[in-house]
Image 1: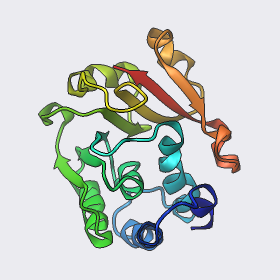
Image 2: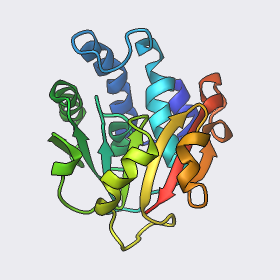
Image 3: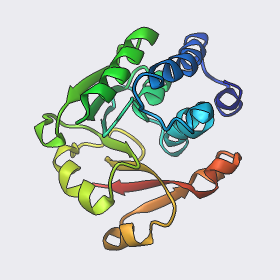
Image 4: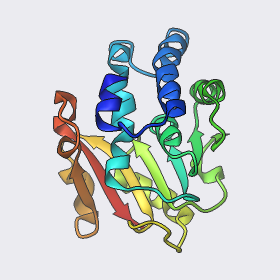
Length: 206
């Protein structure tokens, strides 16, 4: 919790307790179902929970914002974001049922009421969202055609509706066709741990 609290000291006692529970529940589940690399589970707080909260540094969601987490796996980045934004709704979508079960169980155990879950392909999703978020799920060129239809035309945040991705490494090839529209923000601007030196937020208005 020390790293999360260093950057987010404004968390309420309820939120602090929920993040503390995540640090216990994810390792317990990971021993049964591999939702986080076994080699990386010891770095859960920095590499996964804090990484997910990087989106908070880029855009402050207003109450009532609707967010889809595409390819959520075990609930990242949506569950940490749902803790931080109790007045924002998150729809978690994944094709792997056992991973989604982990996310659902963890959300229930920590008392999240602003999350919904859908097992299946993104093509089966209905409804409109202000943002689609993802964490290293697929290339932009593959993702944009899948999610464009979900983005609501009415903006309710300071940042126009669109796609928010947490990425790492060299993105030049991936962003080539969107170079005039995409915005890349380095997470090292916000978080000083070594892990974030190559981590970025990729934002594409849609």
